[in-house]
Length: 536
Picture 1 (cartoon, one colour):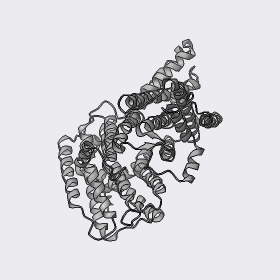
Picture 2 (picture 1 turned 180 degrees about the horizontal axis):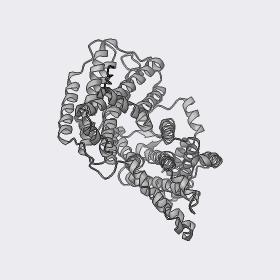
Picture 3 (picture 1 turned 180 degrees about the vertical axis):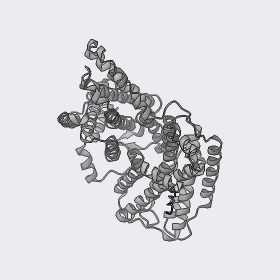
Picture 4 (picture 1 turned 90 degrees about the vertical axis):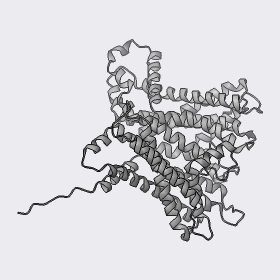
């Protein structure tokens, strides 16, 4: 009888397939790589319409390249950096090192997976551009596009591995990766093309590789003759690739370095779970003490999730500091850029803390079995949920206060003290509304990953449709504003603008907008109450 020899699968394809599946099962990564650039293209395309350049080409011809570059950078820099740190801190890299897998195969698989994600983003945007906006693929420049994207992926991936190799923990890697990429996109001709930047920001953008990737990619979409290669920009990308490889080679390690592996570890050490292990003490706590304890636990969990803190607190502050510098004396709705941004970014913070972060934490506790065990303790379920909602409100108030301090202290923003009650009421009602919407979605969606995909996938497009993030100086089409008027985010913004306008009259309460926000809160609370079993 002949022995059958079973050949093991080749390591690079097998590990690449595993990494690609992990990417597709990670809603935040897939959203920021694929859906976010596409949403940006759709919204900006709706704003510019059929506008043309001085050369007669449609403006939309030049939108695909910068948004595709963001998808490429998100896939090959952020995703590679975070995944490498997660695999290292969870011990997976160390186990792979002990397995008969070549060391280079592990890194090659991550690079191939990032190339797949980056290529998917480019194809998706190009497909949408051709179908919806008459974007022309310049076929004679296609080889240049492929070479540029390949070098861009290699450069960003090398820098991502270098970042993960230089940082000890997953949470720090997540925060640094997003904290570097998103602000850099605003000064690198990605989110804002051909902006008249202050000299220091222009120097920073020109020194770092993202701007060179954006300019080289934009050249391959420019109609006209030539091969489309940009030797100068490609040389800068190659130099940064070599630098990233050298740093990664020197600093790369297989053993865990930090004390935790990010949000997953924070969930396993949830202080709520620890407190619930001693239910005999609950009957001695007053309702106020119960609520205070749950608020403290929820805030502790949020502090451990560095990425949530970044997007809720740090990111709005960066935009407030960056936009007035980039746009100068531009005015929106009769207000200075800084005056408008204090209101719009406060609305964003209210929504992201209550609608994204709060239900995500609740869904994580549900997946870990915390909420089921909660039913066997004297702690009321309502106190647990109220603690999460109050923590979201406090975070929004803290971020709004920081925005106000920065705006008033450095950017000439004015907020009348007599209108502070209107500001506080608006933030309170807005946080209640979006917390209720988050609860309703958590009750309707049983899987935490599906919940994050839905909350992010609805909030960020609504931020653009509702003028939270203002794109350009042209008003949105009437059909878009009609859709935005149905949802509460635009009304929350208008209420905050009414409460913070320095030239307004009265007490600042925009009752018609607050009524819409309150109506959404009541409907969402009714849904969450009806589907309460789904929360557990």
